[in-house]
Length: 474
Image (cartoon, rainbow, N blue to C red; front, top):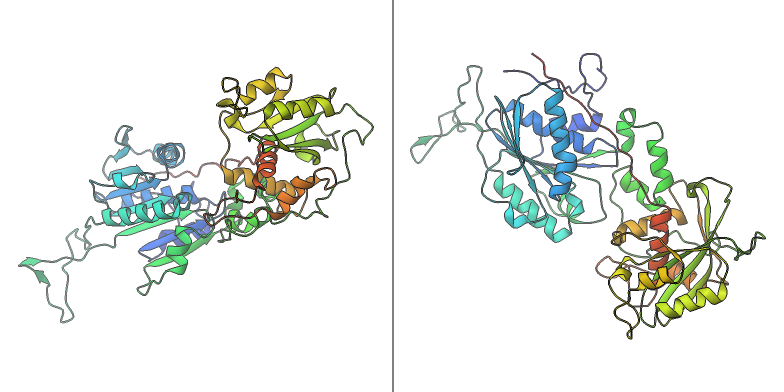
């Protein structure tokens, strides 16, 4: 049988095109029935998944191997792309049926690719080995249901063979052949389901692998920090992560540690002294400086936060400080907000970063045909908005990273004298019982507006860590 150049000596790079990291090697050879590869960004998690899946396929010809992702988009974008890359570079002959999401690899078997976002559809096939990517992206209840469905599918028998390719009989404690219902039994290889994820708080993965009892030792954890794959990453990759993410997420997103992301204060690093500002519009001497406004639409509870940039000699926003220097609080509707902005800043160029849902309705009960965004455009403001709002988690992470990043640098500041409600929101808003920023106290409006602005001006962009490659030995 042809052998594949997947090596487990991470120091030997001369003879092979793929060098496994220490955690990837540990995972490949672990004896857990349900191993978890919990990893930081860029640690080789998805590549390691594909190496392990191909290793199962090549070592057990005829076995069904399954790979899973949270959605079909992610399945095609990441997992199936890596599998195609590795099979092509290895010189293997294969056919990919995009309709059935299945690889047929000549001389070995098939890899079944499925999404986990609809667990009820994980039916109709059996597998010997399975690999689940980004399991923690799913909500806890959906992840648990998907996991239970996947391990229920993982029941295909693959028999152990002796040096002559014959099945090895199963013997009892008296060294006698075992029969069941008159049929001789043979030793089988271990079925295994592996999970791979970047930790997203204390969700299903934490509950199943850390908190829930496991008396038989079936569940085990292999941790992989971003540093373990540093030699395969761009030189500035880790430094960029630390600069881009809030300090409380570095443990999760670089070291692969479980941290609490959905309780307590939403913006836990905000400090009204350390993030305090005395800036106001025109304090640099330019009374007509450009203003940046984050806006949340609400009838009778409209909120807008007015910002200026400092250190504006920089060519881009990345190294500049954003200062909240004013606010509009409890405006009646969008027309009222427009009136206030025009009265206070009639000659300043203004960019507005609003709630994307303003495309679909008006906050003014009397004018349902005119959308909020259209009103802002008509008023002469530059409106910067996507078709839909970002994920709440992404918006919160962007704001938190500007408040205090992993290097303990602060780039967002609030003048508590001129924007007291913005300051109070960032200081006091907490998560509710469902792990979402609380909306019952009324502190959400200014925070949402700030988030719409920051997620556009200072987005967190993850770099591509690149492909690992394998070659086929003849």
